[in-house]
Image 1 (cartoon, rainbow, N blue to C red):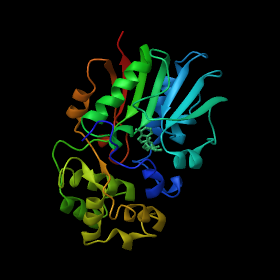
Image 2: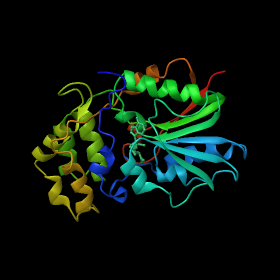
Image 3: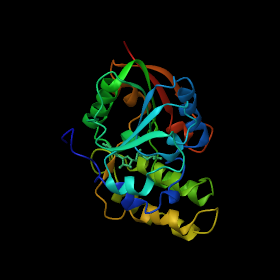
Length: 277
Ligand SMILES: C[S@@+](CC[C@H](N)C(=O)[O-])C[C@H]1O[C@@H](n2cnc3c(N)ncnc32)[C@H](O)[C@@H]1O
């Protein structure tokens, strides 16, 4: 696959989540994930320039030092229309319609880049490398990159394992089922996880998740989010932890790999990386 070819169409997210509020953790950050971004925000000077990859409201709403400039970069006009302007963010905020692999910033000018789950939509390995290369290019030496990453476990689990846990009430949220099914079908029909394969697996589960609408706090709208995967050829790529670390290359030094305390947090660590001099 070509490095520049997207794995999903530009307006992919607005197709699978008509309302952002129907999309929940672990696919959106938990508070303990956002706390890692907050720690990086707190150490910035007032004249810092921050880049957010995407429009993640929890990141943009951090308590930034007064005076910080925040540029949110996203390539989807539909997502920008839905999420911009943010409910809370620094006064000096702007949104830029651009691809993360070609951002309109001078080299070595950015103090912090932050994002949530951004790699999952990129091709492996070229798209992952292109995103990292661009982040390294724009960051100042010593600048930080805080990114939460969706991983697949070292020991693969099957769709049957997920179905068994679902039937036994061992899965806390519909979004956790999605992440587990994405990992369970990984590689089944080519590189990464095809969303239609997730849908097929979901549909075939004996304790049909749809029957759980209204139970365990799951809403029909959240469940519809998975049903929108039906027929979608888009692919997500979830590396293992070791694969992801290897993909980062020599430009970044790992300061922290923070696993949170919530469901599937062991599969969604937040990395704090420093741009080498
Ligand atoms: C940040 S990601 C993942 C969602 C995230 N977990 C959250 O809570 O916001 C979602 C956003 O990434 C954007 N996006 C995906 N690939 C992109 C790319 N290559 N360049 C710019 N924006 C991209 C999509 O348009 C979407 O708005």
